Amino acid sequence: MYGYSGKILHIDLKTKENWVEEKPEEWYKLWIGGTGMATRLCWENITPRCDPLGPENPICIANGIFTGTPVPVGGKFGLASKSPLTGFIGDSLSGSWFSIALKRAGWDGIIVHNQSDDWVYIFVDDKRVSILDAKWLLGKDTYETEEAIRNKFGDDQIRSCTLGPAGEKLVRFANVTNDGRQAGRTGHGAVWGSKKLKALSVRGTSGVRVFDPKTLMDMSFHITKEAQGKDTEKYRIIGTSTNVLAMNKIGLLPTRNYQQGVFESANLISGEFLDEHYKVKVVACAQCPIACEQMSMVRTGEFKGAMTGIEYESLFANSSNLGISDMAACIKLVDISDSCGMDSMSMGVTISWAMESYERGVLKKEDFKCAKFPEGIELNFGNGEGAVAVAEMIRDREGIGDLLAEGTRIAAKKIDEERGTNSQKWAMNIKGLECPGYDARALKTFSVGLATGTRGGCHNRSAAYDPDIKGETDRFTVDETRGEVAARSEEYAAVYDTLPLCKFIRRCFTGKADRAGAWPAIASLINATTGWDFDYDAVDAIGVRSHEMKKAFNIREGWTAADDDLPWRWKNEDFKEGASAGTHVTQEELDYLKQIYYKAKGWTAEGLIPKQHLIDLGMADVAEAIGV
Ligand code: SF4
Image (cartoon, rainbow, N blue to C red; front, side, top):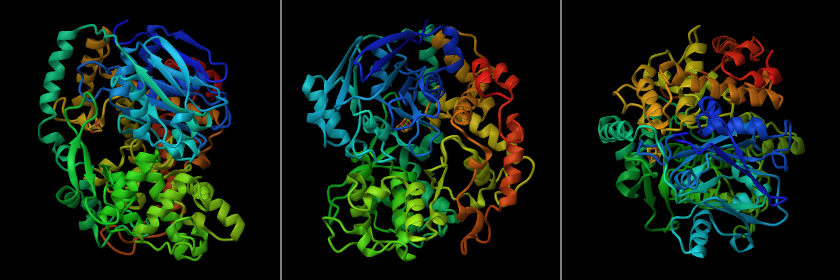
């Protein structure tokens, strides 16, 4: 087989055994790689309805079809398990050198089963697998852990996925980190922590065999050249943080826990301000000619020395949404989340829930007592020092940090039960995953994409904000076309996440990001890599199948249509000012949108998948298990 080894490595942390599973080529044609293949591996290996933090929820890693080849932005892998935040599929992407090392070691995927009694790390040295004592690594942050393992073996070609202190403490939104990149969202770090797995390290020394090296090289040169042009300028020059001013202008920049869509100090937290005052360098994932990661550093003051990569989602969650106009505090917060292995979006949105709860009297100053502030914290919006202290409390599960480490859904429910309050109304999550930096009240196509999203409140899985923001749809109203738009947009995104290719390359094939512009080129790349005969329709089916797999996983875990919902605030409160004032998504609108979305997907009115639909996609076993 070209492009793949045909081998999946299984490791059992309890018995310390490992074994190899060989998959036929036809299986790879269905599942390709990335989040699609990782979800399929979850389907095959996870015990249905298991405890996400128990032994029956394995870690499933699937490499990319283009990883280790010259194809730009193809050096990525998918990571999936049942999410401890949502109870549904938790599927994430990360990129860079780890995935290349994995490919060179000869593995298309790794599945880690069961739980260890003591803290360990795994070292996959080509074909040799060792499970090693990790006690000496405990307490080290994500970067230190990776460096320590490299130093131990004296080889800087060893690449690792690591946990920081937050993962060790089972913070429910902890991340897994590799090469400075995060497999974020949905709490993979907590799953790894529950297994007492501090790191997974790989050294790979073989090459990657492709079917048609010349075609692949010629196409890759062309795409690389295009990736230096105007279509990627936004990402290369300032990065996604340019969205701050754009979102503020249309009144949808989440501000003070999504209470407002306009932040009066947006210019002080903008990508342009970051670029001028804090940027120190630009960093790229391996195999990427775009380089979008804007490394930013605080040089003076209270947060001096804080440094990390800043992109829009981390930025909104740790500045405007906390009412913070001090960019230094924002960089410090994101630095804490990245180095300690926490999802910066979920962390920021959880702190913004706590701030609103404090301002509404649900939480008190004394609730925030900690070693640093023994009298407690007046956690008003805008308190950067207080937010930093709370982030550290979450990391350490200190004081109320123990509750906040559970995420907004669990924390708000528990507080309301204990205190007879109603803070769940401002707990901004969908299915338990904290919301993104696009307020959906006035992005009505996107609102159904978010409500129905298989991993919860995630802008990366539904791209339906794009037509709303570009004006291709009327973002303030709903009509019968929106189900179709939302359905096709998530399938479009799922193609990129399954290959996987970074979506920032999407305009570099022909100048057009749509299917007609990209799918023929992607089919040619697949064929040159594998020798297959994929065409436009086969590429399109990758996204449809991958998304159905995620949905099927959720149905098996007990999903019902009631889970496809929006936060109370988005269904009940209008913005008072700005370009999106006076609108929210009514329950009637949401119910209608869900119905036309289910119809566009070819599902039943209850959102279930007909058997024949799954059989047509080559998923007969899934049809048998959950089809109707
Ligand atoms: S564009 Fe950015 S996120 Fe995408 S592969 Fe390149 S560096 Fe990584």
